[in-house]
Length: 161
Image (tube, rainbow, N blue to C red; front, side, top):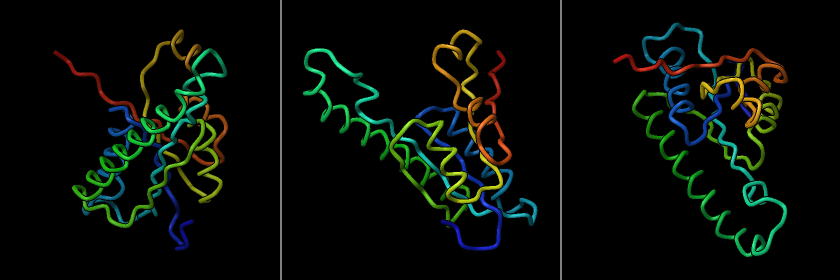
């Protein structure tokens, strides 16, 4: 947990370009050398799904698949953290706390806000429509309603041709 007197910003990341864009946006606007003097302690959180949530609760052979799924999820988490480290270094954002926490991203991010007593949570938006959002659920929507801090939802601009 951050121990200084600065407010804490938690940024949620996954392996999507939207979440990496949200992190990059936050770094550019709040942690760059030219940013205002109002600095935050930065905590970057990756929620690693549990293997059972990916495989499901049954079916023949699902038990044998768990170790392979878990290994893949760990590789993805390691790749995300490496990408985050490289981005922080390239933006001169030193001293960030990086965490990988197993669980559903909605719960993991809200719990990270509580754990670190965060002032703001930054998440990316996948830009799902109403139907996809209803079926898949929206991490940003859940956090906006349940996190006990301000939530900034960063949208990646659409490329105009």
